Length: 158
Image 1 (tube, rainbow, N blue to C red):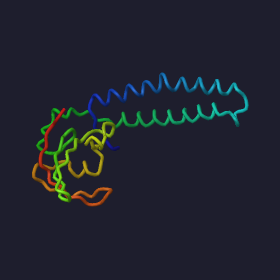
Image 2 (cartoon, one colour):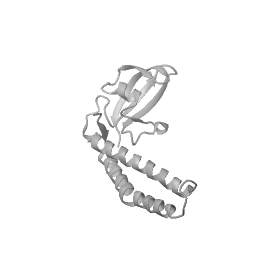
Image 3 (cartoon, rainbow, N blue to C red):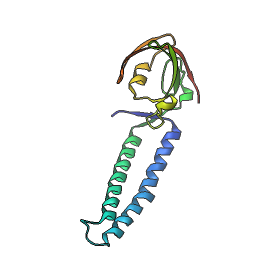
Image 4 (cartoon, one colour):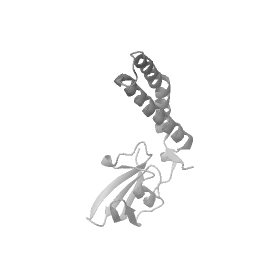
């Protein structure tokens, strides 16, 4: 089973979302299905089919969240040394291709947002950065091709 590292804040958000889906959203969908069922012929009942689709999507999301929660490993990144790249590290890299500097923070899958420099612990680049130290060169095989970086700085930023 693949573990899913996350902060306690992310874990609490997932628990809250799961509870909302189970106790508020899914019951509303079941009511909508019952109300649509009373409108008659189910073959041509758009409200019924939309509500059933919502039910399927919600049930899928509930199952995904339950699975993720069982895999969760709560980590406090501030308690880690960050002398090597690890969960929660902010890493400044030199991209050898265009001689530019780029900064990434290694976060959980749920906090991932590459547009702001937050990359998932499970992303191809993060996997290849983990355990690296300042000064190390990284020959990363990424979906867009091979890239070479130098690790310029590793630190923890809340």
